[in-house]
Image 1: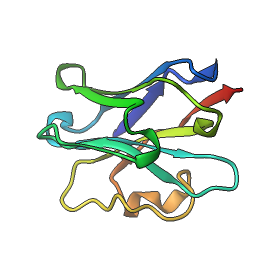
Image 2: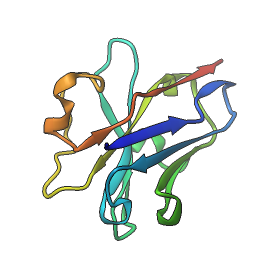
Image 3: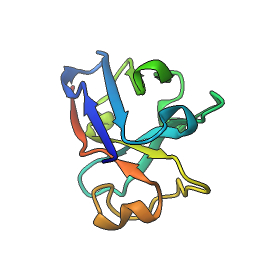
Length: 133
């Protein structure tokens, strides 16, 4: 069974830090591209960061310089280090992964939409990050 399990959400004050982790099972993590999305109330699902199997990374403009994505293939885990957090970072954060051919990272609608697997092969259940001012 394919699974992605997120950990590390919580509440923090503005300027603080959190580290999210997502551990995969049921597929070859080494040969996958994992990433992180987030969804705030009344917003669409937003791609925050992703890391290719060759180590190439992508960051949304809003998090560049503050967030760092990394992966540990031996642990089948992808991390998102979030520093200098802002209230606008408050959202449910979702781990996702493409392990097939030709995933679509341009997700429309809700991150929790049951149809999200038409975009990427695997999704986590989400973890809440709350940043207070």
